[in-house]
Amino acid sequence: MAEGLARKLFGDMVQISSAGMAAWEGEEISVHALAVLKEQNLDLSKHCARKVTHELMADADWIIPMTLAQEESLKRLFPEYESKTRSLGHWGDLKMDISDPWMGSVDVYRQTAEEIKKLLYVLKDHLP
Image (cartoon, rainbow, N blue to C red; front, side, top):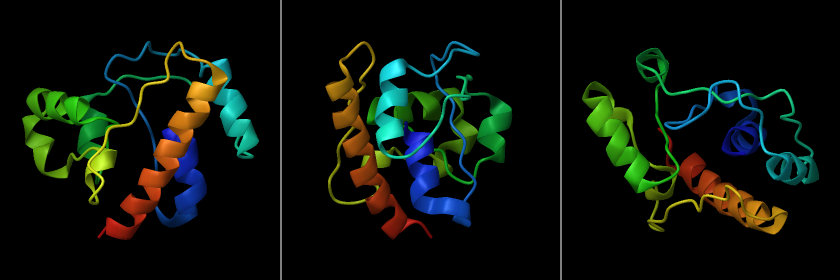
């Protein structure tokens, strides 16, 4: 959901792609995430999960995980990219993690999408 919401907010200003630390390569997006994104006029029906790799980390200007725990894990796994890794909720003053909606109801996914959108606006104000 974060990739789709970020693409909508940033448009062509930045290149955005997502990957997961525990992603099942090729897994389709959840039906609840699709439904919530459709409510936002976004179609990620062709999106498939992929795992974080050294190549993806190297190519990125910024690595923006959803939680502080993910940030810390990425910094341990990829210490050479520590300086460009910061979780989404730690760009402004809010200091919060994104809730993981996995296995939740569509309402849980909606709440997570709202958290992501709120923090993406903070990120947009703080990007160099």
